[in-house]
Image 1 (cartoon, rainbow, N blue to C red):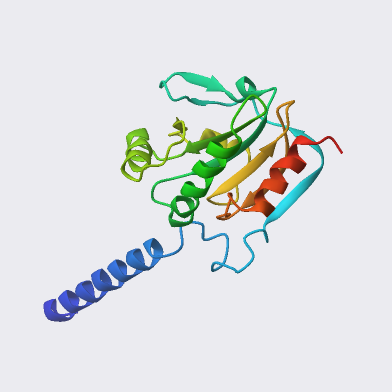
Image 2: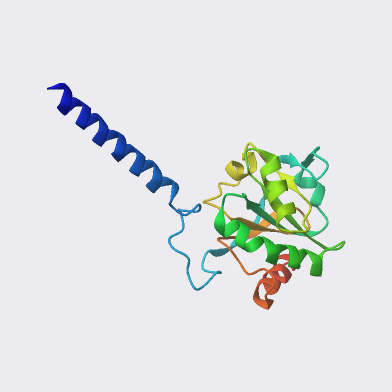
Length: 189
């Protein structure tokens, strides 16, 4: 092979590699789920029986380790998100409104950022005026432990600390249908 052909081949390979990398990065952040759909509740599922959650710790608002068991006694909407995930950040304002409307001794939104650098998630919330306590899991251990299929994913957790359902994809959390799901998670069947 002549040097000119070799140089042309290497250039073509480099261009192909750059296009491939760009194409992979251009995929939706939750590529497990096809294009956005009209029904945000399409990926909602309820467990036949409450499922024990892994004894997993995350970093709390104060930066100290907090286990999921700390939330027992109240219904929890646990949301896994990341600042680089477009569907995640789209639903954050609605999660904050849900927290503002319903938070109390019987309910809490626990939004856990899986950004590798916790400051990325914290800074995103602050820059966008999202008023939620900041929880972080930079190693994505909880994401792996619950076998999350993509981001965002939200778990409905009953007062005993068991998962009773989950939903994948962005959800308009401040609408009546979403509030009905929260109520369902808090009622024993």
